[in-house]
Image (cartoon, chains in turn yellow, brown):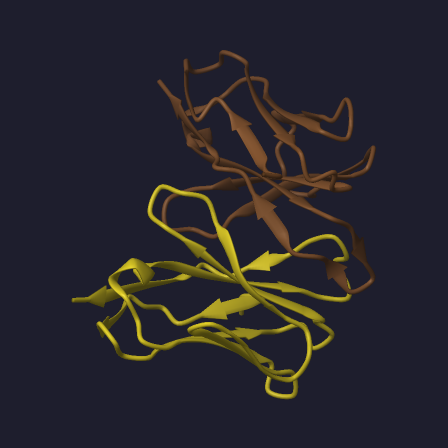
Amino acid sequence: QKEVEQNSGPLSVPEGAIASLNCTYSDRGSQSFFWYRQYSGKSPELIMSIYSNGDKEDGRFTAQLNKASQYVSLLIRDSQPSDSATYLCAVNGNTNAGKSTFGDGTTLTVKP
Amino acid sequence: DAMVIQNPRYQVTQFGKPVTLSCSQTLNHNVMYWYQQKSSQAPKLLFHYYDKDFNNEADTPDNFQSRRPNTSFCFLDIRSPGLGDAAMYLCATSRDYSWAGPYEQYFGPGTRLTVT
């Protein structure tokens, strides 16, 4: 089992729809969770960080964390074609201070 | 704007010919990371510096070395590149880290390495 697993994808949604990206992790002691967006051929860009159970909203993006179930999700409301990218989930556990473990990413395509 | 800069953006080297990739940051962050990312894969951490302290990953080949002469700069040296080392190399910085892990990481634009 991978330490961080994401939807295998690719995920395709129509413009204006809600895109839901999911991530599960195996280290129950994980404390910090991040979502990065990576356009093809570019480097990852931080979208959201979340540390506490519940929802965190930033514009069209909402991160949701449930530590008991060991999952974190990213919702993108009113999806735009410019949201088409690979989304990477990164998790920091209490056994690897200083390091993030990345999932393989989910590729999202938003169709006009 | 504070940022992470990588040079060159594209590097072509010959099999076995040493190559150095550079990273600089104006964020004044304590931590600098080097990742290798191949197509459709997650970034793979090679090593990181916390200030001057070097932290190598157990599975990073000896062929990969790093230097951090000061807070702002970090270098990745590949002593004898093989065809399997062709990848995107990403430098990232983080303000600090604690027992809970690092703060957010900020990535440079990456260097695309081709080995011929």
